[in-house]
Amino acid sequence: MEISINDYTVQSRFMPVLIVFVPIGILIWACMMGAYNLLVSTLSGSMVIVIISAGLSQIGRDLGKRKEPSLFKMWGGAPTTQMLTSGKSILNEETIKRYHAKLRTLTNTKDTNIQGADQTALLETYILFLRENTRDARKYPLVNKENINYGFRRNLWAMKPSAIAITIISVILLFAYFIFSLDAGNINDRAIIAIIFNISILVLWTFRINPEWVRLAAVAYAERLIASCELM
Image (cartoon, rainbow, N blue to C red):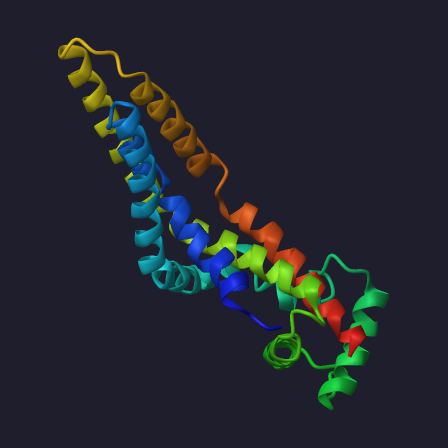
């Protein structure tokens, strides 16, 4: 799987951080009045969140990797190894047996009657083999696509606490700015719109960005990764 700057890096590392800082851009947009300032605020707000996001994209990725073990523990194991484990997989037994047979051939290993920790180690060997041999995005486009989706969701979820804090602070500042405008005899329509947008964003962060949302992408990636063995 060939990962380029325009592919995995942008969509899974840069975009999650960009989304986290959207409330700041909305705040800047709302706090500048006038037609000229509208253009300036829109451009400056966009530039601020792009620059911040670019600078922190690696941090977003690191947070995702650091919190990944807690997700696996919550899910009862890594979805990739679960996909090859009888009783835990969404695949039927015949499909699991077929994949095991193919992976035995590809890795020149044996997995007959292996149980417990030895089985887990063997499955991890299979997964590592598949990851290393599906890095060509042109040859394995579906694996690449699902890997990007999973990375995006994992990294976005990992930044949830920071995102909620940033959004709440933005809403508080917008409320303060709106009240200040009222005291000055002005009704800032953009402040009202911005408050509604940021509250909506806060609701999405609170109720939508959760481990189950990440798990759906992880399972889809695991299914595509393992199925790729039949193309080898």
